[in-house]
Length: 92
Image 1 (cartoon, rainbow, N blue to C red):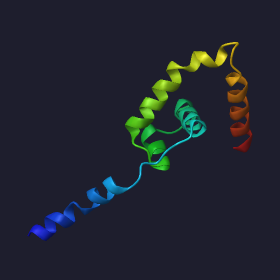
Image 2 (image 1 turned 135 degrees about the horizontal axis):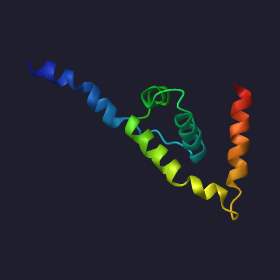
Image 3 (image 1 turned 120 degrees about the vertical axis):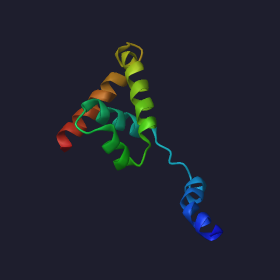
């Protein structure tokens, strides 16, 4: 009976040992844009990118919270974001 219990939880042990996937800021921004488009549910996006939905919600909140910074004169981020958006739009 004990061996069945151990087997039942083997997947949890493997999951804990696996290395956490790290995303570059550009990847996070792209995924956040995907969420803001609202063409797919957060659950669908999470499954596609193998990310927990709670993490995506944090990224979306952070993106919305910092959105005003792209329009500041000190940064060039608005132009970069526009170029990224245009590139994604033309690739569809």
